[in-house]
Length: 186
Image 1: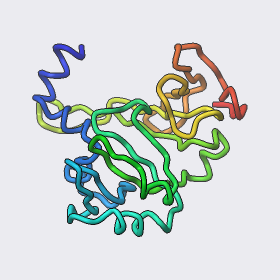
Image 2: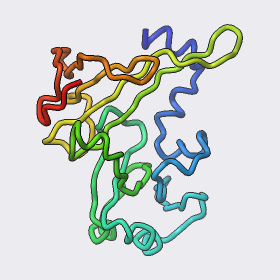
Image 3: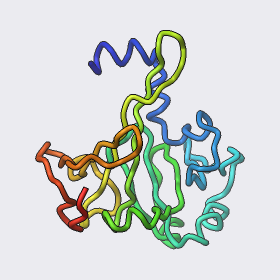
């Protein structure tokens, strides 16, 4: 599937989606928590204007800490959480996006705290060119993680109306009817 089908239907565009520093150019939204980008040894603000490390620190200061997400990573890998004070001395070895922390909706706090729940909606383009939703899952982290990681996540499918399925699945495909840390019943 990933060797034959995905390359044929994405026509090389999937690789662009792996560039975290490029996401906002593609999506053009203020909904992303991007503060700045590190590309080829330079820092850029959200408008892709070159900024100094001191200016980067000022952008991050109101948040106290930031998240760094490396390009060409996923599934919770390539993420680092830094305090604003350690940002000044941090050595950036790869291209990345620097993001402010986000606060999940309180509804999800009943399910899990510590990491932000992630809603994944799978879409597809039909032969008529129309985009449609094909499925949706809620990815929940564990109490011991600061962000959702594929090796420890719990996935719960959503119905077309947005209701949670009664069964969630751990990373090893074991079924569960409640979150193993919080006890929240799906």
